[in-house]
Length: 87
Image 1 (cartoon, rainbow, N blue to C red):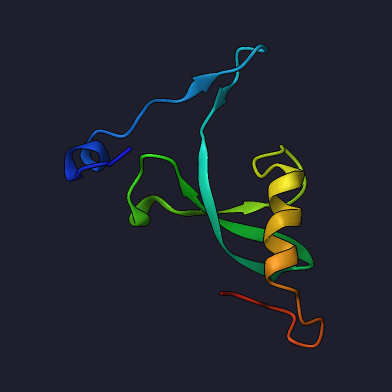
Image 2 (cartoon, rainbow, N blue to C red):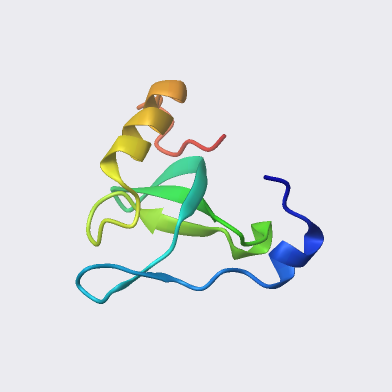
């Protein structure tokens, strides 16, 4: 469905999961980097403008689902020699 400018000004609220925790929908992963030995993904949140993109850890609270990480990683292999990688 087409999303107009008004959709970006009034982003959707969080989804409340079975445990009562707030969750937000991921539109897509934009980049990956390694900081202090931790892999992070730049996340575009569904219904939010680019200035709301955030770096989220690959491990931990499960912000970025493993299947989405694998999909991104398959399309953008990490060059171990670089240490940091962004697309």
